[in-house]
Image (tube, rainbow, N blue to C red):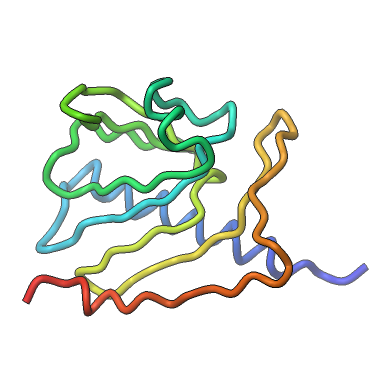
Length: 143
């Protein structure tokens, strides 16, 4: 049996996200850092309000920059309070639900493979002939 290096790399990238969020929970965001986090919403272990799940049935992105509170980082995921359409809500995102994590202020980003939740719910898979588009974060940065 061959070593599945990809499994180790995916686990390491999720550990990096945990460690970054832990640092922010303890010390706050530093400098111009802010995060774009894209995650699967069609998993039972993701806790978001029903009206948010209805609007984003498979995945959504959040931004952690100026308007978030109560970032709590755990071993399996994190919770944070955000406002959705002016309505505050605490959400919980397991690290295994995250499919993209980026800090555009320093051109850092991770793309992760979708993982099934513990219930065995089918993961989001791109079609075999799908192509990925690389987004230049520099073009999005405020000058």
